[in-house]
Image 1: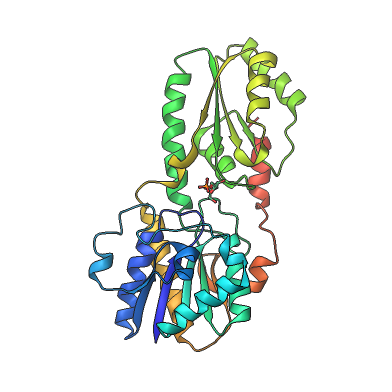
Image 2: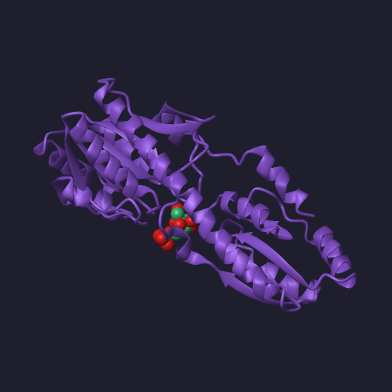
Length: 319
Ligand code: F6P
């Protein structure tokens, strides 16, 4: 059987260990592995090559994805999806693994409903915002990058009378922000899922500043679009000189942590085993309560990820 793997959408640390395991395990199972370069764009343009062990040697410790990724507009058009399918047929590829987020899975769900193709998604995004799985590849590495940055910012913050506002990624999801706020002991965390009570929090912080607090660390999720507002509030209402750090794409880089490497191996083995099982339904590998499960891709793309209650509650526990 010819199997292929590709990355799609934002890259995440853990993709390379998954690609390595894909090639090694496919060979072990007697199958022919292919690598699709440049994501959906490469699938359209037939950038599909048979993989050797050599192609994936020395990559487990590297962030990003050696097969690169893309966000494809062309894939929205049927004629390009037809072209993509013809390319897979040309190589006799019948099973496809996609490392990506929910946008990529939506595209693949459409693709696999139109053409005869067996597809498995591996949730891979630092945002941790995919329905049905508690964990997405890359999250632990991103959290450690953010933690490291916050620890350093706290060092300088605590040496001055200042507030530091740090904007973190996550798209519309507050997961990265709240977990980072919890583990770095931030005083304030603002996420899209919980309305921020400026008045109440302002009163609390002003009282704390009056009784001796000399710095504040505030984490703002990018999805709130409130970075400028919070900056102004810290300066004018709380009365602290404020510096802003937007961590940006540094959060997507870095050597995958032990957790991300181990998760990559298990996600990939589960995905390949499904493709070899001849159960032709399209699935996503989900991590739930310590186990790897397969859930219908339809279910994944027709539902919205909800931040677990304990993280929503954690916002008010920072007070
Ligand atoms: O989905 C991953 C992510 O890094 C988000 O956190 C962020 O909003 C987005 O991708 C950035 O996308 P791009 O790399 O296209 O600017």
